[in-house]
Image 1 (tube, one colour):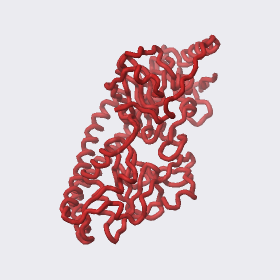
Image 2: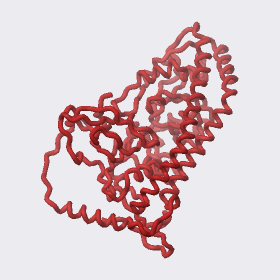
Image 3: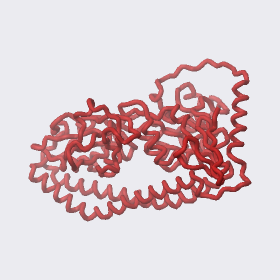
Image 4: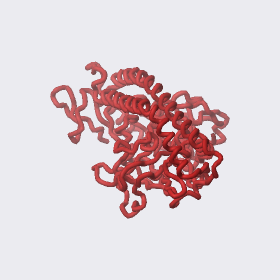
Length: 476
């Protein structure tokens, strides 16, 4: 087994194998997750009794990008032990493998588990460290946006069910400082992140207020025409609703420009919120964006599912992903801008969120039938134009606030990225020559694993799954 240790460069730092990836500080090593962790262990270290209560952790219980987990829900182990749910225990690292949970940063250290154990979503990879890497250090490393972007480029599967495969995660190499230095890094990272999060909490509240203001403005504009005939969206379409396509991101910058979900969440159709994918040109002829196309998120977190936005821009600028549904309306009956206003009213957003379906622990989803069945008042076209103009005048007052919030969010993300980059390149905290080199601990772990592999193992019959992988989840 090769640990991928660097060679001394002569100045106290070690060059990374392969070149071009930077240098490691003295005492650091580089190792794969397969060398550092037991990836997706099949059992607990200490099996609970049937009558024991343990935590249940659906996907919704892991916060995006914060590393926090809600382990307050519990189940009786005997009622669920035969189900093909994910088993994990205190200090395991959870890594959401499915889109969009992984991209959103649903990664956490399992903490505060009832009796130290839990059953969770089948959409988690579980990393149980072998001692050479701290769970918190590993979690913060994986939470880096560039790490998640690279994982996204290596997802497999299609049709909104793309996942990070286990072999990719096992082969992922990370820099490993001495254990004592990892503790110093984690302490400093968490101190600094607590300050960043305080600002981010304020920004999140400001974002919610801006969103609420926009919805309230839309509510007022649409309710003014409540006496007009009400129409179902299905009867106002110029063509059937259409999902996008799921395609793998490319690494060389060649391919098809494709929207990301953030384009709709932030109501910003800019290159910042696109990626280049390997979408098949033969399958995407009808997926190119046109001016005044409306897009609805068919799957996301509970607070974002059903979010919509209207595209204003040049034709054929990009395509859209499978997790978005495109709406094109008959403009002789209803204007796209007016339809977009209706779709972001609180009444329709509440309808989407209340009716979103999904197995417990997975992201809630809405389908085309739900969208087709929404209804709203449709006045004459000139009245629709008046409503649109009134909304633009009202929103002009909050646009500067929205722009400043967006700018601050970008700066906060850059600050967090810079902090983590410093942590994992050895510049956040000083090195201590007295620390045991990471290579020494890794060598001992390697030797112990080799010895364990030679020992005779008791053969056990594998229990059949009660449901296909990824399909069985915990009840809410």
